Length: 74
Image (cartoon, rainbow, N blue to C red; front, side):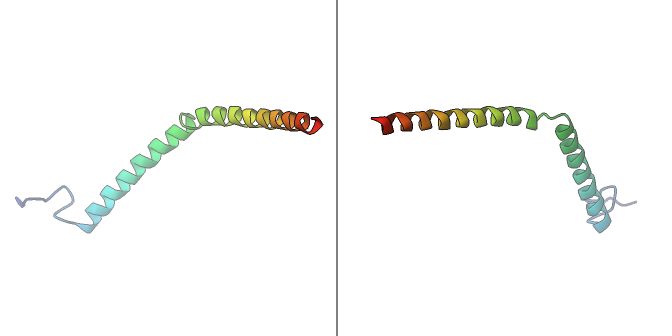
């Protein structure tokens, strides 16, 4: 039996144990990111805001152009 401190289920400071732990963490993070992207939790609000912002910018450009034309007439 091995009663050493720090010995986990893969052995004390085992290279393969550390590698497996890193792989499991990356797999969990990847699954979470995939599920968030698929549900459009992050991107749906940003796309709507971006579309509204583009409309506002176009409207401001038209307003500035109209003001510029009126100033040229004066």
